[in-house]
Image (cartoon, rainbow, N blue to C red; front, top):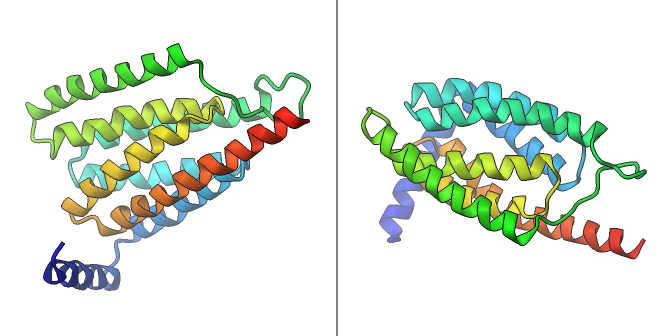
Length: 208
């Protein structure tokens, strides 16, 4: 990226911050809180996630990102389910639901199904006025998979979140939704931190 392009993005970002959309600001705060709590395996990740979803409904409808809007309907349901599962799920006499691996065959199925879903939904959205239908669909489908794995406390959720974060960062910068672009850029680093933290938890579980 040229110095001129960097300067232009920085200038636009500063201008955007001075006229911040309150919904995007709230989304940034709740989104970051949800991920920070998730890395720490803290139950508060779920109410923070629900607040993030409710704010996001407004943003994505305004920007005609319909797949993202639909995604957050699923997110709302999965946040509620994840909250329930982490409290009442399969603890096997432990105080908390343990971090576990997804079987390789099931993980492969998730990957294939996610790509297939991306192309199917992308094709359907390409026949509407949806913006960036295939890229938008990729963040939608892979996020649903990631969210399910998160709710079940599977460590592979971080692989899917990393992919989603990279794609979403590009989409939101392109759409000039800078606060969400910054949020997902930060998420990339948090996904790596989350994986390392959960891997440490798994090692501690194995040694106990």
